[in-house]
Image (cartoon, rainbow, N blue to C red; front, side, top):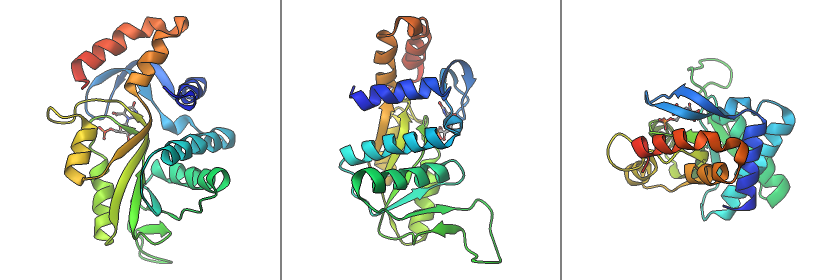
Length: 213
Ligand code: OMP
């Protein structure tokens, strides 16, 4: 694990974004941990979050020219990440997001921000079973643009609907790479090295046995 990934786990724990307990996921699975990105809910934490995403993007080989933030959670993620890319990496990346509701007055349309064109990087928080990415890909293709990849904060490294991992499924179905700041394995090694948190290891390992890949 790289230093920034280790720092990201600490940041998520300090902000209460990453918690241990019993949580029912979108997929119906009962998980001993949960990552609630909505709790990056202050100026300083959102700014710091953007720097982590920007670093993960910069260290990857993702090739893109616009960032797409799916409504609603992707909107602040896209905003803070383009700010960090400009501030830290001198890259002025356009960004665009969708509305969930149709609008028939004012500027109209379902998209807000830059033109949805060229190679589009989708930003999201978590992939578990991998159901959410498809909707973004549809919006991007409908605009005549090309999905170029997905950047997420946490890859839970779970199976999708079949035997493949959710990430493999996304990569095979949509032919795009998925990059994450951290994955479940990073979290497990962090737990292993932290005496105060080791109590959570058995439940997280058991969950990985059941749903992991
Ligand atoms: P999938 O669409 O199954 O990959 O689930 C991803 C979505 O589940 C995320 O966008 C969240 O809405 C939610 N989620 C979290 O936010 N954090 C978690 O740790 C787990 C989930 C989840 O329900 O799987």
